[in-house]
Length: 257
Ligand SMILES: [Zn+2]
Image 1 (tube, rainbow, N blue to C red):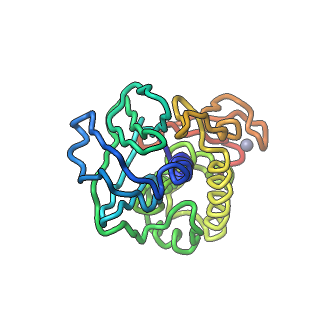
Image 2 (image 1 turned 120 degrees about the vertical axis):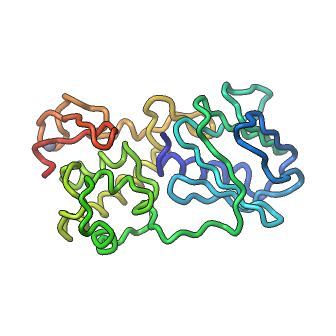
C-alpha cells in the first residue's frame, strides 16, 4: 500500500508533467469510481499531498482528492499502450495519465474547498509534545497510534516498523507510556526515515512503481520490515515478526524496549 513517501513521489513526478497543462479528455473506465466533474479544457493548477491523499486543484475551482489505497498506481504513458487494470484515463497533449488498480479500492472524489487539515503530516515538522499529548492515556500499541491517520497522516505499516526500530521503541508498548524523550527521538527518526524514503522514490515491495514505472529504492534501506530471522542492523539479534492489529510488525526484541 502506498504510504507517504510513495504518494509524495507521485505528487512530485506529476507536478513535472501535468501542472499548468490542459486536460484534453477524461474517461472513467471503471464505473465503480463514480462520476467526475467536467475536466475537459481545464488546467491542473496544483498537485499536493496530505498524508496518503493526493489533491489536485483544477481551474474553475474544482478539487479532486485521490486515495490510492491498496493497489492504486498512476502511470504516465507517452505511447498508445494501456497498462492492465486501468480505471481512469486523463489525457494531456504530452501524454496520458492512467490510474491502474488491480484491487479497485482507490477512490477519486471531487472536493471543494481545498483540503486543509489540522492533523500533522509525517513530512512536516512533527511536534513531540503535541504527539505525546494526543497519545496521553491511550492504551493502543504505539505502532497502531503512528498509523492512525487521525493522529499523524501518511505513516503506514512499512514505515511504522522502521521508525520504531530507529527510535528503539517496542511496537507493542501502549502509546500513552512513551516518555517525552522517546517522543522526541521518534519524531526525529520519522523525519529522517520519511525524507530518505522520498529521496529513494519509495519502497518497491511487492508491486510499487512510480509514475514512470520505475522502482523505488528504499526497500534496500529497510532495517526490519520483511526481515524476519535476519540479524538486526544495530545489534545482530534476530528480527522478529509479530501481528499487531492484524498487521505484520517487524522489530528487534533486543534494541527495542
Ligand atoms: Zn537490535
